[in-house]
Image (tube, rainbow, N blue to C red):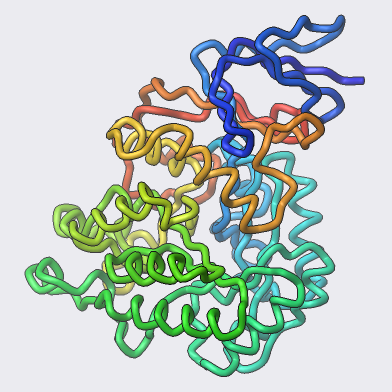
Length: 428
């Protein structure tokens, strides 16, 4: 029997309402005990967690790992290890691969590659429609049986309203959430940043907030009429937050997420960055008012999770003009630190709230046996050093992506250790 004892840590587990100094004993990959003091059996590996937070493993619900098909940007192996370095014990791989993950054979491939990686667990998200073309539903049932935890065409919006209704109805049969990318493409009109005063001032074509809010409203209506499980990705506008808050108050079965870049950056930063494509993302960085609404949504529980929306690109793509460059930033290794720095240290959220957003709530949304440190649960654990100061240098990333708007930024807070199934997969 293999044993590990995590001693002297501040254990935070929202699923049990625990925030206390406790020891945690792991036996054969599972939590065996939680006590104020545990005497180590002979042969036990001791981890001194003094000054550290010990939390249920963090789960990244939204990342683009690129494999199969675009391994020059990222592989499942580099992505899984980068996720572990960022404090995640599990990462969900979106379906926009080449070929698309719209078939159980691709789902199996991703799961097998994830097992080989030796980093965070990898959970595939299957495509909602064949080829992500929005014309016919994909093999949802077969992918669910192979291990797909959710279904999505993101970063494409499913514009066919009837097909979206059918998708919500069908996925309900498997109790699987439908992840939607809320964007009215006609309203976005090939814009490259948020439409507002800043876009007008610097001469870039804008994407209005209404492009997101129109689709949020549509999908909430469809979810209400079908009782389907709707999950709205990367919420970024005040109107979206208000629509979701109202839907939840009415008892709708809806969840949503936000990214660290949308809680910490705004459209004014795009102007200050001198057209650097590392600040280009979809949804775009919004106005200061939108960001404040998103922060309020995190505080009052409207927003359920924080995700990386990791979208690595090859360095050649990062050297293109802003308008022509692809959307997305590399964020697996900065997401947790940015959240600690900009939410916990800025006194927007308490650490228990932050753990819930990264761990307990994602596990509940995805239906995973995770997000808790109850005795008997799988020992997926994230240890955090809330006080550690560090500077972001993308050259040191494990991820192949270097496209981060946080290059050179000083952050306070960093994952100290990542444990998956009772095994240390990363230690800072």
